[in-house]
Length: 187
Image 1 (spheres, helix red, strand yellow):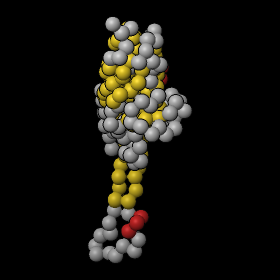
Image 2 (cartoon, one colour):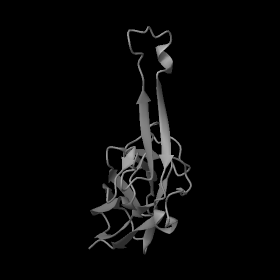
Image 3 (cartoon, helix red, strand yellow):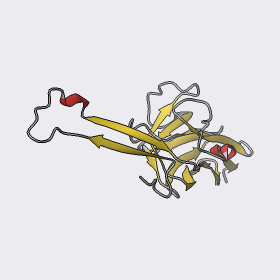
Image 4 (spheres, one colour):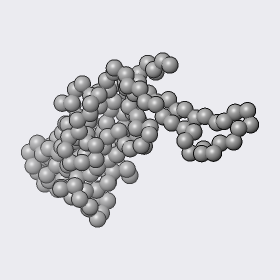
């Protein structure tokens, strides 16, 4: 067996059936999975932004996720997301439109009852990420007041409220970045 060129892990699914007319007395044990590790890495990176606008204006901040490779990562067995992008909204702004796959949260990470206006959002990625996979997360923010260089945190997590540590990621420093919002007074 040879591993795929850009694999971090591979899996072999094995299924057997009786031959020569034999009767299978327990078909639930006819399937297994063998997992194989590879010496490879995948650099996951959070994507921040810098936006500017006047008080009362709505601006779009393109946040996101990128797998810089070289390996692809997939949770093929569990189907769990490979990561989540956790976004804390900068002071002085209100989210007026969030991507559909992003769940509104309280600052502590709990349930928030409305799609817009939450102080924090969690956006799950798919269960796989090929090399050079990117996912854009356009957030629309209304600038409510001037807060010089207001910053919001953009970090990769595994579903919690702490930055993720991925065993395959050689550059964990780029798993956290910022959305910087520069507001100007209303004219």
